[in-house]
Image (cartoon, rainbow, N blue to C red):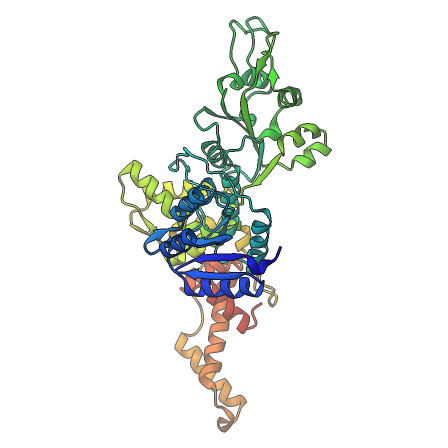
Length: 488
């Protein structure tokens, strides 16, 4: 491919982005033309030749998504790459729905985007437009972190697909929300979505729940019952905690995935399983396979599209967005005005390990909305973080005695603060000639700070978050001072 013949049009209202793309793509051998709005680029693409378009989404006077839709109507074969600083599930799905070749979030890797342009031009293919998606059904999947942007892109790419998906993620990360979003943007979106938790069903009832049974199939089967596979026809069946499925049910499920049919327990009628399967687990399924608790062949049938939902502690930058969302949700239900966290409290939330992930954060917001008497929520309402976050309790490698068992608070014995400072100054004068002392102020402050921090950290058992709150300092400031004072 002679890249000198390939013309790339770039639309972005950020001059620095236009400069970077023009420079990098120009050095790679492409002819690049840049625009600061959609209208000018559209006019150029309509009245001249071009081979690829790169567009931002939010620009004055027009949307890059609308530009994408118009371009794909006029020139369906033209590859369009969408870039944005506002990466949301809505934008990702909308971009792919309207035919984007790729969707990238800012900041992007310039080397990767040059390679991506090359692949787009080499392939000269793009996704077909897909209509009819309800863009309002996103179920609270929120995040601007890189991990969530990648998740949004994957969900967007799965639009118009019916492939089996296996979702991995810790408890409380929102695996069911992801499954619902995949269903909402699939060809089966008008069919039912049925969510089943394998861990919540008695093992002897799993097969009956999933596949149904005939009257008299077993003791207590007084009538025919249709299972979730039948009730989910033309829709999606979400099997949560698939790792807890009994081995017998795993065998039946494998046959359904292989043959596309099943029979009710005690029956002979062959029933078509017209349903899409999305499974999820927080377990290590390869480990379960090695221990004989999960079928290897079933794993490969389910793991056609693996999808990982990040833990909340791996994306702390999303916590303010989630807090705003949950505050607004609770406010709608209770008519209580939304609350907000102080900067210190938010920093504390972002440093917490969140073993319960997003579900734990949501429960916290609900509790604070009801119980907190003030609109502003401070660190004093987050004492649970000190007790429950082992990651935050970092022992300081300092001199012996600093981490001694805590003692009960008591009045400080001995001389007053004034007497102590006077004694400290007298000690400096007795140890040095007054003519040799030129930094007494800094030396006194350093000693006072070191003693103060040492004492507070000892009383808090090395918990820097609690120590910073007691001292009235930012945690990062405390960390830097401890380093400068030799306390770590």
